[in-house]
Image (tube, rainbow, N blue to C red; front, side, top):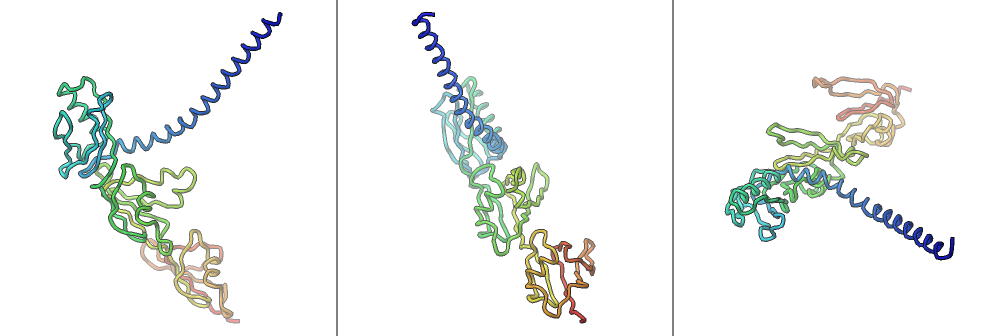
Length: 289
């Protein structure tokens, strides 16, 4: 092999290496974009199923027809005025149904042969939810965007009151014409794979945050009275939170009064490692010796 052939071979190898490097960089740059697209798919699906209400603001675009792009607010009757079509009712339709209604109207009027219409809800004004109980700012909260989740709404309401709020939130409303009720354990929302627990809130829902669960201690304890029941709290932990026993108190024969499912109060004898329940009343006896 002469010198010219050797140079051409080296040049070819260099070009191949550069091409492979460029391809690797291109794939690496596309990977985050693909991940973002996959993450955006559920949010897009949720908005597509959202029902547009009076007072909502929508942005309408038609492919290759910029003159037909429009951002407008629905009237109290759920109607908008759209170019070439005039008045058209979108209130009560899902986003997908609104896109189909606009496309059919443009096609029926022979304005566009095969219109591709996109509708996006940019502001939600008419649709509100009630947030009640132990939150920073209880009251009616507007759903500013479609597909808002439980944590979004609670944040708008000022969050759970740290001094009084429970970990369990109750959501009631209607789904598919049927009454809906769901108890959500907030710590599970933030656990791995807890996204499904952070449910999507619908217009007209009511969110209730109860007071934190409590137990009661009396008898020979340092600080008798009401005590917040922490998750999984045992009898021993409750006694420690109340300052422990007095000099006259004894751990033997601890009695707990507990209301059963039938509403009757039962008197139970628990060990120090037994877990307590909401509303339990713990009595610490006086030592006889």
